Length: 179
Image (cartoon, rainbow, N blue to C red; front, top):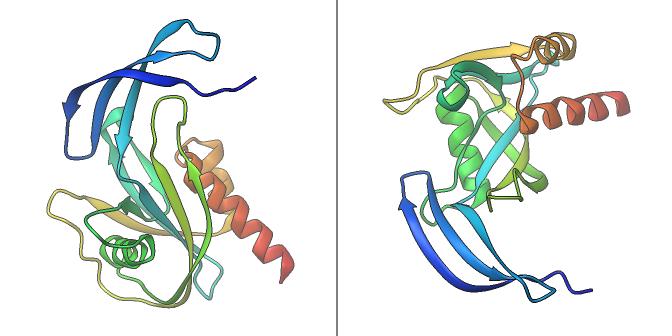
């Protein structure tokens, strides 16, 4: 069976700063019709940065859709013509003050493919140098550096409660186990 859905009509409902929303009329593989609501997003990056003291560099910030603050790895939206790697370097510096001597891509993944096309490019930062954060004027961020044990506690308390950061914690466990 072929799993392709053919779009027969597309209506853009909303165009925003972060996402666009459209409704697609589609023909299903069996010939029936249906509708799909699709959120379009330019994509994002996230950065796994571990200090020489084996602390994971994270930030705490308020997340309006959840009405609570979360502890997360540094991340941000792709903008303009910047590559994912350039965006990763910029977001790490802006949110934490750290610069990386080198960035290496770990993986890319879709966040919610049932209704959104957002893809996150995950990078690991090497040769960190501390500096001053350069947050945007509407960003209120607290820099936090946590051990793996502290990260596990934050996950249990649902203060770390997003997939990219949970993925990052598991990744750090894997790389530290190999050392």
